[in-house]
Amino acid sequence: MHEVGAGMELDSSTRLLVLRVAREALANIARHARACHVSIILENTDRELRLRVVDDGVGASTDVLSDAGAPYLASLRERASAAGGALNVGRNVRGGTTLCLQLPTRVAG
Image 1 (cartoon, rainbow, N blue to C red):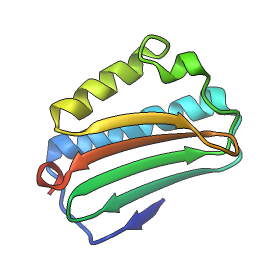
Image 2 (image 1 turned 45 degrees about the vertical axis):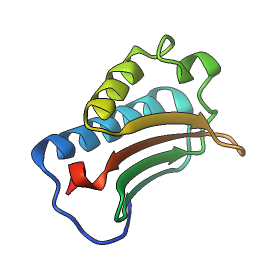
Image 3 (image 1 turned 120 degrees about the horizontal axis):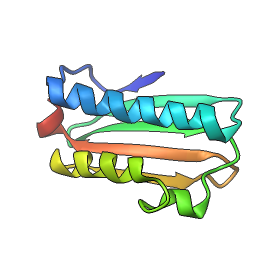
């Protein structure tokens, strides 16, 4: 776990969203990724709070990257959008997957 930026207090709904996204990402890494390393990076800037979960596993397949292939992603994306943010998932160049939750600081702080 890496924290970047100034410490901050999060309201309960934001804490719950960050926890759910991190927990779901870690559960899927454990089930499917065959990863050796996972990094959880929580960044706080003047404009946004960003949670990135990065693994070095086999990488998510194209159908998993879509909401149709992973219904849990659709639910998490809806929650992020309702909070004014976004949730994106992509394959890393050297293998593995990165999940990124971005929330505006006004929501997070």
